[in-house]
Image (cartoon, rainbow, N blue to C red; front, side, top):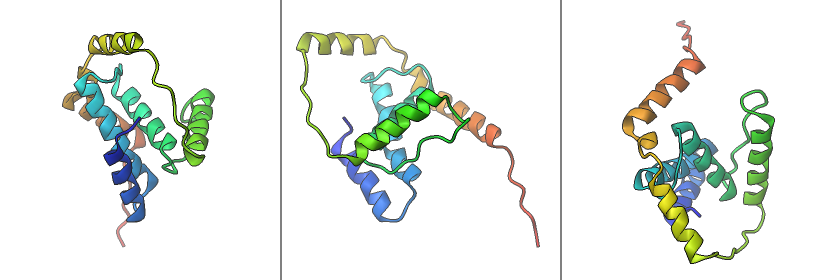
Amino acid sequence: MPRKSTVKAAKQDLREGKSASTAAGEFVREEIDHVREGKHGARSPQQAIAIGLSKARRAGIPLKPPARGKTSEATRKRSERDYEKGQSEPKTRDEGSTKRGRARVAALKREPKSTASHTALSRHAKKAARQRGQTVHKTG
Protein backbone atom coordinates (compact mmCIF):
# COMPACT_ATOMS: atom_id res chain seq x y z
CA MET A 1 0.00 0.00 0.00
CA PRO A 2 1.58 3.32 -1.03
CA ARG A 3 1.84 6.19 1.43
CA LYS A 4 -0.89 8.83 1.26
CA SER A 5 1.75 11.49 0.63
CA THR A 6 2.97 9.59 -2.44
CA VAL A 7 -0.54 9.26 -3.88
CA LYS A 8 -1.19 12.94 -3.11
CA ALA A 9 2.04 14.06 -4.83
CA ALA A 10 1.27 11.92 -7.90
CA LYS A 11 -2.29 13.26 -8.19
CA GLN A 12 -0.88 16.80 -7.83
CA ASP A 13 1.51 16.11 -10.73
CA LEU A 14 -1.43 15.01 -12.88
CA ARG A 15 -3.43 18.13 -11.95
CA GLU A 16 -0.44 20.27 -12.97
CA GLY A 17 -0.62 18.68 -16.40
CA LYS A 18 2.47 16.51 -16.05
CA SER A 19 2.58 13.15 -17.81
CA ALA A 20 1.41 9.92 -16.20
CA SER A 21 4.98 8.56 -16.22
CA THR A 22 6.14 11.60 -14.22
CA ALA A 23 3.38 11.00 -11.68
CA ALA A 24 4.35 7.31 -11.54
CA GLY A 25 7.91 8.39 -10.73
CA GLU A 26 6.67 9.27 -7.23
CA PHE A 27 5.79 5.61 -6.67
CA VAL A 28 9.11 4.41 -8.09
CA ARG A 29 10.95 6.81 -5.74
CA GLU A 30 8.96 5.43 -2.80
CA GLU A 31 9.79 1.86 -3.84
CA ILE A 32 13.53 2.67 -4.06
CA ASP A 33 13.31 4.08 -0.51
CA HIS A 34 11.55 0.89 0.67
CA VAL A 35 14.31 -1.30 -0.80
CA ARG A 36 16.96 0.86 0.87
CA GLU A 37 15.15 0.59 4.23
CA GLY A 38 14.79 -3.18 3.88
CA LYS A 39 10.98 -3.01 3.75
CA HIS A 40 10.96 -4.52 0.30
CA GLY A 41 13.22 -6.95 -1.52
CA ALA A 42 14.28 -6.43 -5.12
CA ARG A 43 17.08 -8.21 -6.92
CA SER A 44 17.68 -5.50 -9.52
CA PRO A 45 16.89 -1.81 -10.11
CA GLN A 46 14.55 -2.89 -12.94
CA GLN A 47 12.52 -4.97 -10.50
CA ALA A 48 12.21 -2.06 -8.05
CA ILE A 49 11.05 0.19 -10.91
CA ALA A 50 8.53 -2.41 -12.10
CA ILE A 51 7.06 -2.73 -8.60
CA GLY A 52 6.74 1.05 -8.36
CA LEU A 53 4.97 1.26 -11.73
CA SER A 54 2.60 -1.53 -10.72
CA LYS A 55 1.72 0.34 -7.51
CA ALA A 56 1.13 3.51 -9.54
CA ARG A 57 -1.29 1.70 -11.88
CA ARG A 58 -3.14 0.19 -8.90
CA ALA A 59 -3.39 3.63 -7.26
CA GLY A 60 -5.22 5.01 -10.31
CA ILE A 61 -2.42 6.68 -12.28
CA PRO A 62 -3.42 6.33 -15.97
CA LEU A 63 -0.16 4.66 -16.99
CA LYS A 64 -0.32 2.62 -20.19
CA PRO A 65 1.03 -0.94 -20.22
CA PRO A 66 4.34 -1.45 -22.06
CA ALA A 67 4.16 -1.71 -25.86
CA ARG A 68 4.05 -5.11 -27.52
CA GLY A 69 7.55 -6.50 -27.96
CA LYS A 70 9.04 -4.37 -25.16
CA THR A 71 8.26 -6.98 -22.48
CA SER A 72 6.70 -10.41 -22.26
CA GLU A 73 3.00 -10.86 -22.98
CA ALA A 74 2.48 -11.97 -19.35
CA THR A 75 3.93 -8.66 -18.10
CA ARG A 76 1.65 -6.73 -20.46
CA LYS A 77 -1.41 -8.62 -19.20
CA ARG A 78 -0.41 -8.01 -15.56
CA SER A 79 0.03 -4.28 -16.31
CA GLU A 80 -3.42 -4.17 -17.90
CA ARG A 81 -4.94 -5.89 -14.83
CA ASP A 82 -3.18 -3.45 -12.49
CA TYR A 83 -4.49 -0.54 -14.55
CA GLU A 84 -8.07 -1.90 -14.45
CA LYS A 85 -7.79 -2.46 -10.70
CA GLY A 86 -6.68 1.15 -10.21
CA GLN A 87 -9.59 2.52 -12.26
CA SER A 88 -12.22 0.62 -10.24
CA GLU A 89 -13.37 1.35 -6.69
CA PRO A 90 -10.76 0.63 -3.98
CA LYS A 91 -11.43 -2.42 -1.83
CA THR A 92 -10.37 -2.96 1.78
CA ARG A 93 -8.36 -6.03 2.64
CA ASP A 94 -7.73 -8.26 5.64
CA GLU A 95 -4.35 -7.77 7.32
CA GLY A 96 -3.36 -11.44 7.84
CA SER A 97 -1.29 -13.13 10.51
CA THR A 98 1.33 -11.42 12.71
CA LYS A 99 3.62 -14.44 12.61
CA ARG A 100 3.66 -14.45 8.81
CA GLY A 101 4.23 -10.68 8.80
CA ARG A 102 7.26 -11.03 11.06
CA ALA A 103 8.65 -13.82 8.90
CA ARG A 104 8.21 -11.66 5.81
CA VAL A 105 10.08 -8.73 7.39
CA ALA A 106 12.88 -11.06 8.50
CA ALA A 107 13.19 -12.46 4.96
CA LEU A 108 13.29 -8.95 3.48
CA LYS A 109 16.08 -7.94 5.85
CA ARG A 110 18.21 -10.66 4.22
CA GLU A 111 17.66 -9.22 0.74
CA PRO A 112 20.42 -7.04 -0.74
CA LYS A 113 20.08 -3.28 -0.35
CA SER A 114 22.70 -2.57 -3.01
CA THR A 115 20.01 -2.99 -5.68
CA ALA A 116 18.75 0.51 -4.90
CA SER A 117 22.18 2.07 -4.40
CA HIS A 118 23.14 5.27 -6.18
CA THR A 119 25.65 3.31 -8.29
CA ALA A 120 23.16 0.60 -9.32
CA LEU A 121 20.51 3.16 -10.30
CA SER A 122 23.09 5.20 -12.23
CA ARG A 123 24.24 2.05 -14.06
CA HIS A 124 20.63 1.23 -14.95
CA ALA A 125 19.89 4.77 -16.18
CA LYS A 126 22.97 4.83 -18.41
CA LYS A 127 22.15 1.40 -19.83
CA ALA A 128 18.53 2.46 -20.55
CA ALA A 129 19.75 5.66 -22.25
CA ARG A 130 22.17 3.67 -24.44
CA GLN A 131 19.33 1.36 -25.51
CA ARG A 132 17.19 4.35 -26.52
CA GLY A 133 20.02 5.58 -28.73
CA GLN A 134 21.19 9.02 -29.70
CA THR A 135 18.80 11.72 -30.82
CA VAL A 136 19.61 13.46 -34.05
CA HIS A 137 19.01 17.22 -33.93
CA LYS A 138 18.55 18.88 -37.29
CA THR A 139 19.69 22.48 -37.48
CA GLY A 140 17.87 24.83 -39.74
